[in-house]
Image (tube, rainbow over all chains, first blue to last red; front, side, top):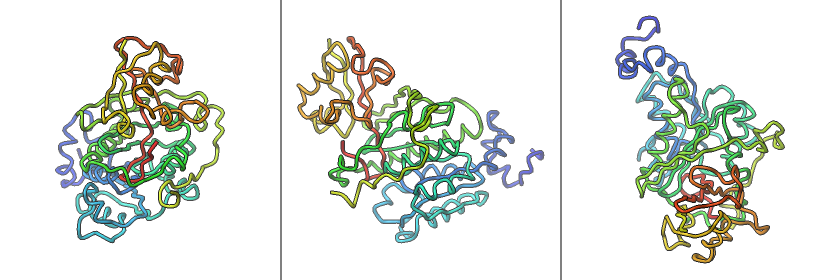
Length: 270
Length: 98
């Protein structure tokens, strides 16, 4: 173990990893040296960041512009009641560091736009997308393709979730799956949806597992495969995702070469 | 020749809250037409004004996206399962209603 420069405390803290042959001291060192960016300290980002912190991810970036609202606490487990009104990045950092002081947390209290996304993702190995709207999803996808970053994607709707990994050059991207976002006019009301509070816990932790597998280079990550979870049926399914040779962003001859800020769907329009 | 069709939550209002329904047809296009006959209103949620499938909705036959098969002409047979898979973005409230 001494080869890896662990402290005694770290050897104890990560002992259940270190004794796994697929992880070992070498794998734990990889985790401690890895850099993961969490987009959104919300329903998906909370469990993902919390478990990744426990696992000993060395550097974690957290991007979120919002403040903690009481309605978040039904599912966003990084925050607690005393945090209401605080910036989510601050409350997230406090929770993560109190779980594991080994984790260096970088906070980005910014709205992601075409102007700042490349700067924000630049220093990270893996981008874990837990954002909550289509404009950000497409922006993250396109920026990850352009900057050659792995995007661990998770999304939820009421009782259902989707997880996949978009790995540039090796598999499809979000636009291979859905070439364009739904038009803003297709959204007459944004208040109709809800989400079962535990659901993002399942989907976010699946994203965290995929991130660990990618860092450790073990198993088969969800590249080219869309995992669907239906909580009401208690059912997991996997569908095949294929690279679209005419994909506007990741094909040989992309038609999208600059980042696009799509309109926000909620709030402004009826 | 019944085909099992999986309905995603955003469309379940149109199918009396059923997540799986049965439809008939020799290919995907026919199955989707039969779905509209049984559950009026579903077609306009799946197709745009030009009659093309919306680009934020994918149709799968078993595990394969029909865009990588023969699209709506993809043949269907007894026991096949069709899934309608919309893009979802959530979060809790900022989801699209298609």
